[in-house]
Length: 224
Image (cartoon, rainbow, N blue to C red; front, side, top):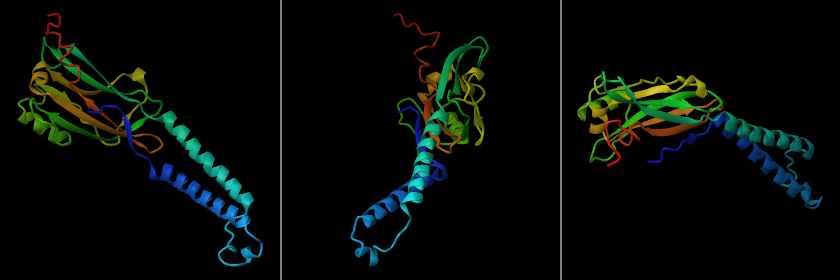
């Protein structure tokens, strides 16, 4: 599973439209350059007599369009979210006097990312990964795996449009809490987070909520 952050969609209005405009202006420039280098008597006949734009305003429009495309690309890189996750074993998390595995999400970027969707995929021991499903579907699949919500684990319900603020100092956003029994009974619980940044681009990261849980269990002797 590739758990690296990736951009899955660009904004049609803020990315595609300026790029299309720049390409059209380049086509017009090519036409005018070719037209300007043919004989004068040939320019009196169709289609060479068609003049789309004078070179002076065309150059100005090209400069503006190019600047808009590069400025947008630079700004998009500046405000791009940096989606990450943190996890640790915490005592008295799910069951009293027992350790539980706590997972949190964080946006380490400069701008606010708005949650578009959160999907889940349950992987049971010895089975292949199933299809992506929503919150209710994940609860049903986990119940079929023999673990119950509130007893063996807890999951945060994310609503579309919720902000994921780009400040590490505010800490993580709770994603889920899992008991030792959950870590034993479920092979993997994958969370697919999709967010939209301030320039309209959609970013995605897949998090395995149980990654590292078995390696760091406090009741496992790793010196043997």
